[in-house]
Length: 361
Image (cartoon, rainbow, N blue to C red; front, top):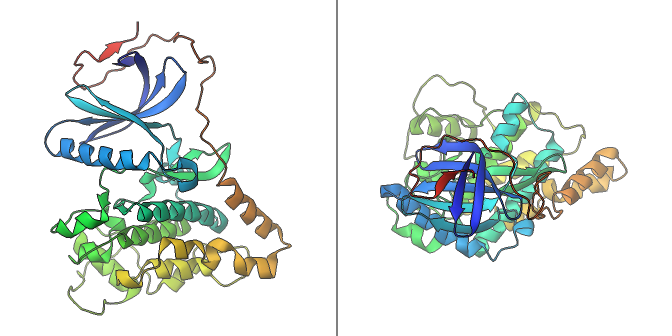
């Protein structure tokens, strides 16, 4: 085990949970409190240094936001040792991609999709109030908080690629959004706004419904072709889709309903909402606040026809549970306040020590 020393605070790194070109993410104990935190470590060099500065600026703006109501990860603090910048967050359990993988990528029941969608929409409403565009919504950036205690309670993470709305007009040819969730305006080189996040969420909702990505293009041309196969050509035919062998494509979004059958025979409001999220023209794309009032989320049509059914009751319980306060610090057994660590292991960690990362004493 290694320890990150920051002034009077000591963080004992327990495990690495993610690693990439930007740096790494680790789970760590804060010795003085026994609280488990997530530490994102980013190298202060070149492009990475600019990315972390941008993320820190946005995280500081989000610190005033109610993390539980907005379903946005709680940012704690940051510090730097010269070589790396360290961003500390509340510890969350696992992301939706990992959850899907554990479940063999089986389609998620529609009532659970509704619960997740409502929470991410709440996050998008708050981001819009702050004029922030996330630009990288995907299953990996939607985290389950504590699935055993709070089933399908989620929070949005990773603001490393986020932008301020009034600044994006100055960005030329942006390379944002993961390919499967990339909006038409980015693919086609059109002006963009916060609606890119709604497109990405629509793709995530469809993916949870199907068990696989809706538009799994191998490159941008293939991505456009998948979208054209499902939504038809855009009004302004600027691109021709690449004619490559496709893994799977739908001739319309209506065909998704046959893949993941809902136990209640009411109109497929889920697909109607996805259609409002996935429009070529971003101006016609539904707003987060309007999506929260959509019958799929509000259960309005289900209530009028199936109020007495177990299905309706379960859906209501799911939505209520997703709004519970989970902000209580995670304290590990034997790690009560003031207690000292009893584990003396080393963690091989390939970051410069700079006098900060030292073995446990």
